[in-house]
Length: 130
Image (tube, rainbow, N blue to C red):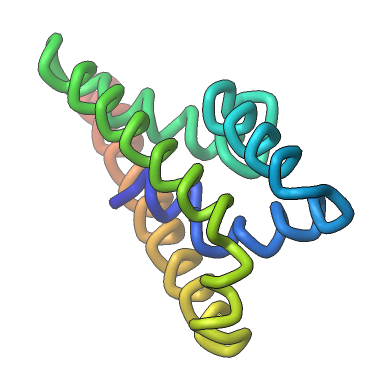
């Protein structure tokens, strides 16, 4: 859920549509594919928050946690691609007010994840200090 909230595929659709509004369908599909294949090139998809969350999720254990993190990131990239391709229909269907609600809910989830990371960091620091 953390990746979904930080990458926020639903709220990123209008941004993507704005960036590709003058392009034809083939160009939009090509840009969408490039964006999800190398998400680090588009900071709204994989910015510092996404990278920190991936590090936090995979740092807790061994190989299984790393594999699950990679798989979930890949699934989210596929979801992103589908939403980018059909984004115009999605925005029209759910409407601007529902899009605002979803964005605010994702913001709340990000705040909770950030708070959890701070608490875990402080707890770890206090254990090592005392």
